[in-house]
Structures are given as C-alpha cells and as structure tokens.
Amino acid sequence: MRPLKLSMCAFGPYVGEVSIDFAAELTSGIFLIYGATGAGKTTILDAICFALYGEGSGLDRKAKMFRAVAAKDTTDTWAEFTFALGERVYRVRRSPEYTRPSKRGNGEQVTKKAAAALYRVDGDEEKQLAARPLETTEKIENFLGFRCEEFRQVVMLPQGEFKKLLMADSKSRREIMNVLFRTEFYRSLTMRLKEYAKELAAENARLEERCNILLRQTETADANALAALVEEKKAQLKIQAENAKNLEKLHRDAQDNLLKGRQIGDLFRELNAAKKLVEDDEKKSADVKKYRELLTAADKAARFFDRENTIDALKRELTEQQLALRELNRATAQIAEKFAAAQKKNNDEQKKLPLQKEKEARLQDLLRYQKNAAALNDARENLKAAERVYKESLSQQEKLETKFQSQIS
Image (tube, rainbow, N blue to C red):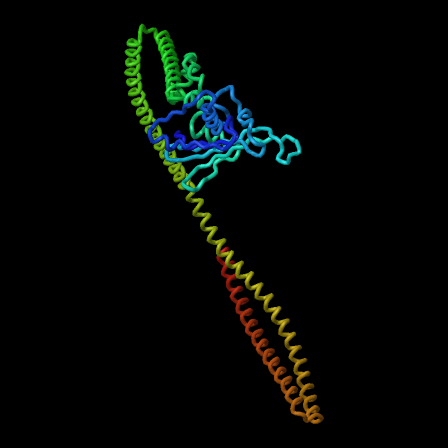
C-alpha cells in the first residue's frame, strides 16, 4: 500500500480541515514525520488507521475520542485517506460516532451516527464500492490482507508499540511473522504432510500385522518363505487348472458320444416300429382287399342314393312348378278377362271420351296386359320343359335301380 493523501476535519488536535499530500514526498522513496511532543504526529497515524478500519493506531485511543474538543458545533468530524494498491487507487472516508449540540441552538444534544464509504478512483471518475462502516471495513481487509490489529503490528508501529513487538513472546512474534510473510500456506502444507506420514505409518503397521497373521496361518518363518510358498501354490494351481481343462474336454466328448448313442437308439426303435407296422399290414392285406370291394360297392350305392335324392328333389320341384303353372293359368285367365273387360271399357271410353290423353293411358294399360300374357306363356313353356326333364330323370332312375339290384344279387 502507498499512501497518497490524508485529509481530516475536527479530528484530534486539528480543529479545522487539514490535508497532507504524501505523493509529493514519496518521490524520494522515504519521508519522515517529525515534530515536538504533542504536535499531532500520532494523530496522523490515528487518522490513517481510523479511515481504514474505524479504530485508532493504539489500543488506548477509541474512535469516540477523535472528535476535536474545540471544534465548532456546525463542523463535522471525518478522516479521508487516499492510497494506491498496485495500479489501482482507492479513497476511503469515515466519520466516528459522537455527540454535539443541535444546530438549532435549542440546547439539545444530537448523536451523530458513524458513517463510512469506499471508492475506486479512475482518473476523474469514482466508483463506490461500499457505503456502510462494516462493509467498508470488510472491503479494506480483503484489499490489504490485514485485520486492524495485524495492520497496527506489521505496518504501523506507533510510539510505545515497537518495544511491545520486541518484547513479545515467540508465539506472538510467530503469528506476526506468519501474517507478514504469508507463511500460512507452508504451515498448512507441513501439517498435511505430517497427517499423510501418520496415515502411511498406520497403513504400514496394518500391513505388517496382516503379514504376521499370514505367516502364522501358513506356518512359515518369514516373508521370503511365504513368497516361496505362494509360488509353489501358484504352480500347483496351474497344474490343477490344466487337469481341470483336460477333464472338462473329456466330459464334453462323453456328452457328445452319449447324445449320438441316444440318437442311434431312437433310430433303431423307429425301425422296429416300422417293421411291426409292415408285418401287421401284411396280415391285414386280405381283410383290406375285402373291405376295399365293399367300399367300392358302397360308393356306387351312395351314388345311386344321391341320384334318388336328386330325383325326389326334382319331383318336389316339378310338383311346385305344376302348382305354379296352375296358378299362372288362373292368373292368365283372369288377366285375359281383365284385358277383355279393359278393351271393352276402352272402346266404351273411346266412344264417350274422345280425348287423346285418355286413349294413350288406356293403350299403355293394354300394353302392360300384353307383356303379362307373354310372361305367362314363357312360364308355361318352362314348366313343360321341367316336366320333360323330370320324366327323363325317372326313366334313368328306374334303369339304375334295375342295374343295381342285378349287381347285388
């Protein structure tokens, strides 16, 4: 961190606003703050530490003590510090909590709350990074890498504190050096290596115990004897594995031979069954011949019976046709009568109604009667043809029955 500028107002012995430009003095690389006792040298360090952390540079100076006693009631107390970290520039401004008379002049006391803000300065522009005291302190700790007490011990040693550092015990100095030189990583690495060494020692002890158990179980003297025994067992296992492989091959061959034997046995059983069937067929050949002759005769008789059934069906159909023919004859006679009556009525109507339209209607009726008469004549011819077929079927049936009777006898 490089200090650039410090400004303060109503702070410590400084009643008004005071600014210190460190940038101009840092060109030589080093500068000295000097003056008589009580001149305000420690106040400068207090202002820097207060602006950063909200506390003084010494443990005996509290933030509420920084209000200048002689400051006017209308003047606020604050400290502003501008510093650089690498290439970045930051400005922090902080006010302590204090009590002052009211600006109204009514004699009342007003408590001014603590305030703080942190900005990043980029030329003429600023970006606010924090707006509350606690938030500002956390940002400063992250940027600088020190808490307030570490900052006072490592970076800032006000009057009387240097002796305290020299007289500190080894533990306190070690903690200070750890923070100053960032040795926390190496301390953590050392602790981790120690833990890893303990784990390796425990693992080694467990392996040794396991080795001793194996030596007792195998009744061997040491690790070399155990290794020789292991090699011997490996050789025996290898021989046993070869024997097992040979036995497995013999077992597969035996299973294949057994399967082939079962297949041959099945073929022999099928051959014997076929021979028995042939012998039974030879014994039954005479009966089969007789049965075949009877079957042929029965087949012929079945065909005659089928024809007889056909003839019966034709008879029934002929009877139905004859009945239909008689019905058609009666219908024809009725139609003829109706036709005659219609013709007579038509003649009468023609005489009475000479209109051409009614004549045409009557003529259509006559045409329909003529078509019906023609259809009746066709039906009559069909019935006659069916009767002829029926008579021929009866004749054939009689011939077949005569022939069948002669064959049976």
